[in-house]
Image (tube, rainbow, N blue to C red; front, top):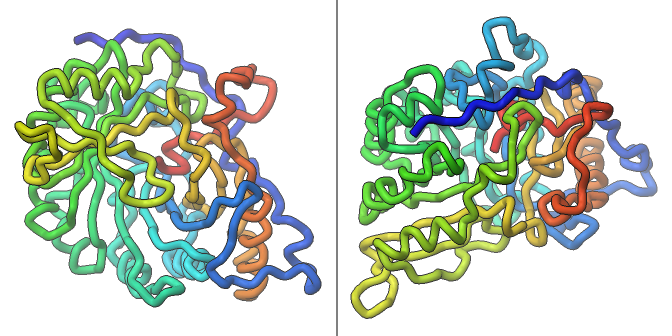
Length: 386
């Protein structure tokens, strides 16, 4: 199916330079917040999940994330000196873990493009939660480099991976990644990850109406019974360069209905608080969940907001803390670190930022006016990670 091309909106403001100053009260001895694992935001949501972007670069040009019209050969990526070092990332992560984070996901751009990322994984794998348990340490990748790196990632301490895969048809996949990358190489990377023990593997498919919805059933059939969890994600209005339109969103309810008509499903309970995906298991002849057949997930970030129990913070590749995937500005932690902040300073700053968090963009989307070009636009997914 041929994708409809629409004019691209090129942001006039480089959001990588837009940042918020940490709350002034964080530095006051009388209002210090210590890290004790009990931190909650203004809506009572705990801090449990940290997404860390390790690079703003990617070797794909997916139109919903890094369209080639914007991220071309002249696009200025962040210089290496601006990126947090592995030691700085680990220091920040350690503080987040002390505040209650139990899961860390490495993202990008494409995180496997960050040189020697195995060294960072080794450092993060040594951290322990406030209960003394190892972190749930995972990584999201487009799979292009996974075949050659899977065993080294596992050896470094990575537990599992999530692979983005928007279809099995090679022509559709090459069109969506827009760099003519073959789907066979990603499938080989997935098999290499499974062989290396990086599981359970999750497969993420962004569904864009008019582009790849005909790949839903082939994907469901391909991964049923493999032990991998296929998740369908509604095409989201992240950033300002993907020309997002509501009529290109295929609601998750339609995805479930389509699959259920061919492969009967039964709804499952959430596996964890704050889970973004609604779980559906393949049903057996009696209508019960066939565990051997596995399950799928649907992430309804547009049609069914899950802000109410969102427990995720996001750290950009050069050290800005974002409280929402749809935020326009982040808090500059890099300057704090490089200016010599103590561990107590860093913990108090993060504590005050999270305590003041009231973000719930997806719940308010229908009430908000679209970006007009006169103010700050939302940060790009390629910069903050998914």
